[in-house]
Length: 330
Image (cartoon, rainbow, N blue to C red; front, side, top):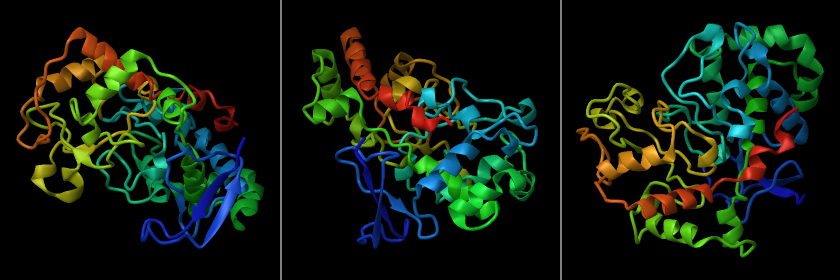
């Protein structure tokens, strides 16, 4: 495997600044057309830190009942998403939101469905403390795992396992979950051919068709913005409003990537749709008429052939090798 040239820099203070140093690893590689990865100054990438993060990702003792790990809701074979609409957390407690894919999470500028967390390191704290997820305390977790993880923590960060080490190791592993070798990518590199249905679906998806790429912009197939996509006329979940305090953000959630969409059902922030056909049918209605639904939403007509072609295109965004990559599992 080719090594990946990754960049260290201040993240996200000045992403356009020339990074001061580089690091080469064989653990993952950046696909053609992907921007260099930026790492925080206090959490530069090393293979040892990655290995510690992978180990912690599968650690059930992060949860209070000892039965839930990061991998419980983010399964590698599901492109690091979950098959349930909402996955039960510690003690079987069920929350309100679907577990989002971690595909290319390194490129996200904000985290959680409403975008209230600015870094991957900080994001680790949310499920640890959330009653419907791990329901635990990070200080207690580190104390309980201290002896078993002492050697690995010192090798990776030169200190014992503590909240600093735990959050940064998990963030390091997640930043390596890079996916960019779907059929569509291979075709873009002139390394594969696509069928006529995929080509027609791409035309429908793009600016000359339905304009789906305004929100699901290549190469990540997300704009990293937020939108109320008209699921309800009155929002049950406040979404981004909870972060901004702005009523116009009611029911708005982070726009997800469409990469690996064939592996990440069910769909939407609450997992209400089980199939891509249901998703297309929703958007074809133009939304439920929420006062703050995105202005880009408008009803449209699809023939059966159109639906088939759009799903063929979306399926071409599935990176099958990513979903079965043995590097992700200890």
